[in-house]
Image (cartoon, rainbow, N blue to C red; front, side, top):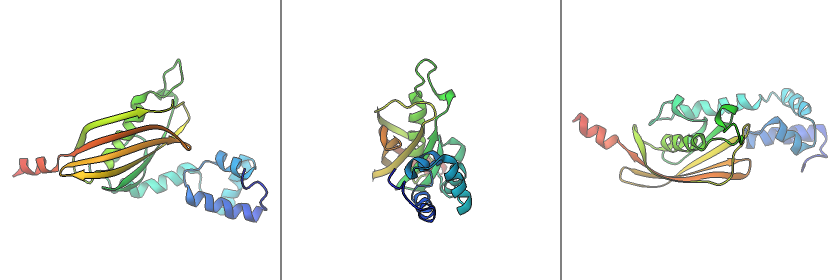
Length: 194
């Protein structure tokens, strides 16, 4: 609670700045940060005209989906939040009860992998691409209700191959990482048309 002794005007300004820096921050995390109730944060957001986290996430994502080339929007696992083709991308996955093993309550790995792989495909600056190689590591178990932020970065490119690093976090904790070699099929498709 770094900011628990702020006056209301100071808290409102700090809240505005916190949401600007991280549009995906929840009311619960803001309440903890400012040492107030979740209801107080909701009222503060309303006073400032700041929408709830789902609406903020959707607004951020709208621009990113328009930049997709190798995938359609419905093929992304999670919500695409940012995309700079050929450079980097960000997605958020809300984990739900249908994603977990019943006995342990741990999210099944293929959901986390699917978020990472679809993000790696999204970041590729190609009309068509596929996964050539995937080197993955699950670092921490993910439980139902946790929100995963995945960051993809193209680390290099060689001819039709893109080398993409993806890391997924729950809060500040890294839970998954992968290195992909994504293969662009654009040359192959062009040759087939000729």
